[in-house]
Image (cartoon, rainbow, N blue to C red):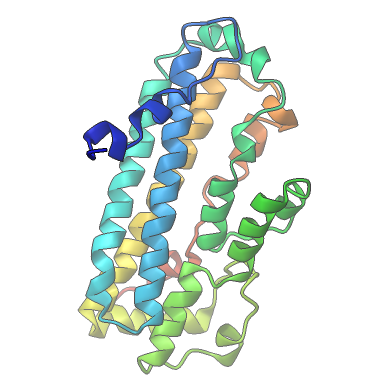
Length: 262
């Protein structure tokens, strides 16, 4: 059979993935499509960040990683804009089908957990939540144990002559990122002496800020839709989501802001 646009992209399969749980509430279609689109973008972001990690592990020129990082930042802007689309749904329109979601919740997005782990926010409690889903659990365990993007960057710095403290290089990969005064001094020297590495650091700050912007918009969207009701799936809803706000992914890059000098 000749390859066509719709056969290459499996359009018929794609368009049959929107299965209503309600008897046919109009706004359930938007809800499904938005969240399916989120999962596709999460997949692409992971794809880009894994490529950036490969560049760092191969000790290639740092500029090789710029393109993937800028693409990721652009995707994050799309994710934020999708909140605007979802907010065209009023609270009453969401409530028209919410009960049909039963225990399903965005809280259960394993790709989002993979992304958090990749970015260094690691918590074993998220593994426990998938104990009864072995295929998903294996994916998350792999992400949990592998180095984060930040750890890959620090290893890259070590291979390029920057004197990172041994406890940083020998740390367990499944630990979350914590701030380090020693690393901050190295970062300050990079900003003063290595423009390309400094530019990559700024792209990491952009990534951190982009994730925080999406988290904030997501929290406010949930709050304006369901207020402070518990989330579907038994989560605490807005109160749980607020706990993730304003927690930097790369605290050292923020800590040095007050230390810059000419």
